[in-house]
Length: 160
Image 1 (cartoon, rainbow, N blue to C red):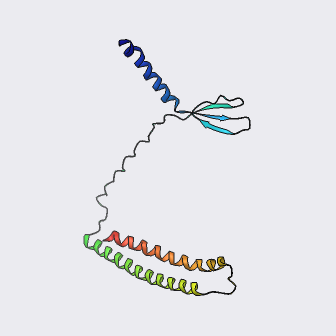
Image 2: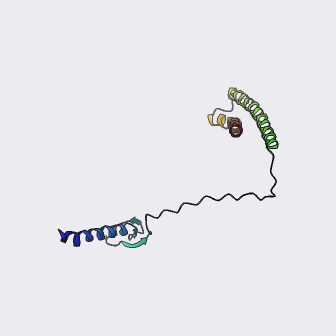
Image 3: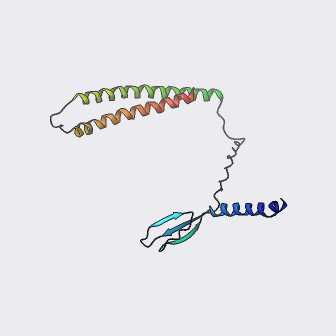
């Protein structure tokens, strides 16, 4: 029993360590036709040249970045009063709400224009791709106004 713990167990650990080191080595093998093969086992075929590529330790994990410390404001730095900040926030909300109303009107008009264009069938548009090409700018305009409305609503949600 002591023979096992003295000789076999350490030999087992050395074999496992050697296997772990082997896993970090990759071989680039090139055959006679110039085709490259990458493997963790060195190929022994005729006409194949293999060169070892040391990839370094596979367990390396980048260290987490420490959060940047927020520097305090200087003592003479101008501060905004609570009333002034509320007034600015109210102005911002009012501006965003007016922009939202304008974008909603523009979206309605863009959808109306798209519907009108979809109803039009011209005799020279026998190829359906021509119809799609004609409608594309109208669809893009609708999508643009929808994205604008989504962005404005997201900004309004941040204020509330």
